[in-house]
Structure formats: structure tokens, C-alpha cells
Image 1 (cartoon, one colour):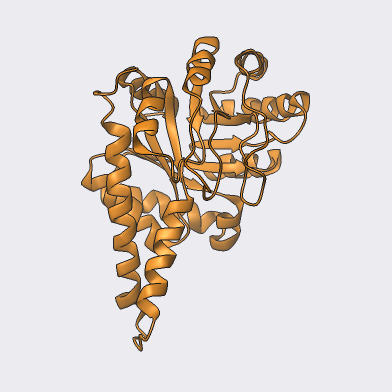
Image 2 (cartoon, helix red, strand yellow):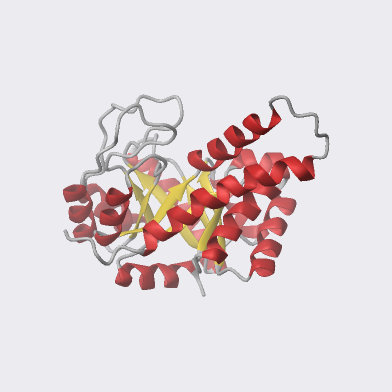
Amino acid sequence: MKLQDKFKIVREQKSAILATNFYNFETLIGVLTAAKKTDSPVILQLTQSSIDYMTLPVAIAMGRSALKEFGVEGWIHLDHGGSVELAKRCLDAGFDSVMIDASEEAIEKNIEKTIQVVTYAEQFGANVEAELGYIAKLGQDKDKSGFTEPADAKRFVDATGVNALAIAIGSAHGFYTQEPKLDMERLSNIRSATDAFLVLHGSSGIPHDQLREACTRGIVKINLATEIKNMFMQTLQHELINNTEIDLRKVFPKATNSVIDLLTEKFEVVKNTSKVTV
């Protein structure tokens, strides 16, 4: 099933698909173990940094073979593609979905680059995601204004034909210094303005009740990255204190298990939205 078709299904269900980044074999296995445990579909995400680390052929081969081995319904997605060229490379390599992120450029330039990727992706039937508005990245000011305007979202989607749109409604990448509060009314207004599939980036640290409500208001894809690598590394650091074990196959599984526990909970959150009242 194409990701676009799956998005239609989960939107009708008022749920979402968890899109999780993986960085190595251990985090990949953690993601898929939790997905299988909760009988959840998953979007496996790779950034340029992860692609550079693992190489593109190895990264996609790992993702594909692991999805098959675990029997999990899933798709492979380029997260925050910084150039049209990278998006094309990933599509040529067999990605199901790519993101072109030109959100920090003027909207006309963002539209121009997105159109290029959408046009190229048509031959593959692949999903294309773009970003509109200001969603702070690691190291950037999280207080900066720049939420997505419904009218801009409609204009952008109509001009580009993009399938999915990451919107700025109060989330940010990385850690939060105080509890975030998503602008739910803005989300509903954007959903009314456009039929594009809406994406929430920066979900690490957002309270579960807000994630559930976001799903009921139209979010169909929820990105999770920071909490995964943080949980893995914190567990690993703890295990390595006064540890003389040199067999990484005995040390890494404990960090992987912590990722499984984290994601088991997260998968259940985005699936169980039926009791939310808006």
C-alpha cells in the first residue's frame, strides 16, 4: 500500500502513523520490535546525517530487510531533505516518501523547490512532504514566531501539489525547556483550509493528551527522533559505568530494550485516540 493511501485510512480513523528515525542496527530493531508488539504501522525515517553515516544503499537495505523480517507494515522516508538533489537520490534508491525542507527560505523559493520534487516523485508514485512555517530545529530559538497560516497552507498546497505538509503549531525539534502547548484551533483551521496530509514534527516531550488531540484534529504523521537517541544513549552511558564487558552484543541490547519500552508507549498513544473529545 502506498503511504498516501495509508494516510487516508488513518485520517478517517482520527489516528496517526508514528514516524521514527533510526541511526544504526540497534535503534532500527528497537523501533520494529515495538511496532510489531503493538501491531502498528511505522514510517522509518533517515536524515542526511544518518545516510552519510550508514551510506544510502546500506541504510535502505537495512530498513527494507528489517521490515520484512519483523513482518511490520512500513515505509522508508527521507526526513528533512535539505536539497532537491538529495530527494532525487533517495527516490532513485527506492524510498517510499521524501521530505524537501525549504521552510527557512522565502515561500516562493519553498514552492519552487517543492514543485521540483513533486514532479520528480510522480514517476515513482512516492509521497512528498514539505514544511511551511517555523519549526525550530536543534540550537534555534524556540520562541520565534512563525506559525503556519491556514491561507498560506492552502496557497502552498495548491501551488505545489504536495501530498503532506509539516506545519508549525507550537512544536520544536530537540528538548523543550517548558511544556509545549500546541495551537489546536490553528490546526483545525489548517485542516479546513487544505486536504493535504498534516504532519507534526518535534513530538519528543509533547504530552500524550496533546498528541492524541492533534490526531483527532487532522495530524496523520507524528515524527519522533530526539527521545529515541536520547533514551538509547542515556541507557548505554549508564551501562558502561564501571563496566569491563567488551562484547558489545551484550551491552547494546539493554539500550535497545529501553527504546522498545519508549516506543511501545508512543505507538499506543497515536493509536488510541477514540476517547478524546474536542
